Amino acid sequence: MDRIEVKGPNSSRVVELRRLIDRVGANSEEIVLEGERTVREALDARLRLLTVVVPERNSDEFADSALRERLDDTVEILVLRDRAFERLAPSVTPQPMLAVAPRPQARMPTRLDEDDFVIVLAGVADPGNVGTLIRVADATAAACVVVVGGADPWRPKAFRSSAGSLLRVPVVRATDMHTSLSRLRAAGARIVATDVREGIPHDSGVLKGPLAIVLGSESHGLGHGIDSLVDDWVRIDMVGDAESLNVAMAGTLLAYEASRSASSG
Image 1 (tube, one colour):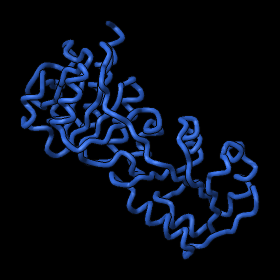
Image 2 (cartoon, rainbow, N blue to C red):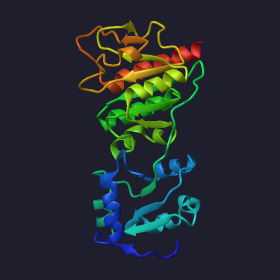
Image 3 (cartoon, one colour):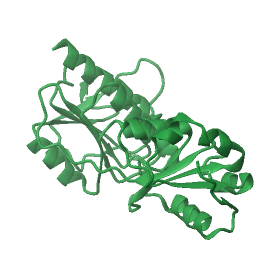
Image 4 (cartoon, rainbow, N blue to C red):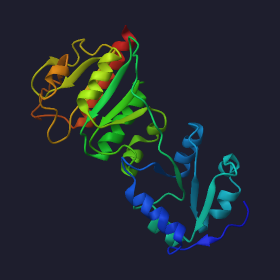
C-alpha cells in the first residue's frame, strides 16, 4: 500500500464520512459496512466498494493482507488516527475496518416458482428484527424479502443482525403495501398474513408456495386493512401463557415451515 496521509477527526473527508454514517437510511444511495469479514463477504457478493477506512494501528497489517490485494485501484483507502476512527465507527465497540459501497438494488419478482416463498415485512420497526428476519430468509432460501415501511434494512444495527445475509438475499425496499402485495400476487404468490388469535394453524399445510408471508409491526401487528389482498390468515398456537411471539421468532417459525413444506413436496 502506498503511503497514505493519516487523517484526524477534523479532516473534511472524515466529516463527510461522519455525515454519511449519520444519515444512512432509506433515501441514502450509499451503505456502510463494518468489519473485515463483512468487507470480504461484500467482495464475494461482487459489491463494488467505494471507500475502505482503517485505523492507524491496523494500517500495516491491512497493507499486507490478502483483502488489500483484492481491492482495485478505484477504491479510496483512508487511514484515520485511532481516536478519529473510534468516533467515526457506528458501533460502540468498533471493528477495525469500515467500507462504503453503493446501496444494492433488488427488484420485485415477476414470476415465482412452485416452491418459492417471499417474506414481507410490513412496518417492522426494530432494525434488529429486520436484520434477523433477513438472516432467516437466507437460512431458509426465501426468494427475497420485501420491506414496506419500518426500519431501513441497511442501517448498521440491521446489517449486524443479518450476519452478512443482506449481501446474499435480494431485499426490495417498497413504500406501499397494497401495491407490493398486488405485484407479488401477479407473480403467482398466495398471500398469507399472520394473526395472533385467528386463522389456520401455521403447521397445518397452509404454507405451501408460491407464497408471500406477511409479518406486521411489533406494536400494532397487521390489522385487517389488507383483508382484500390476503388469501389466508395463519396463527401460531401456543400452549403456554405468552400472548404472542416476537415478530422475528414468529417469522422464523413460519419461514421454516414454508421451507419444510417446499422440501417435502
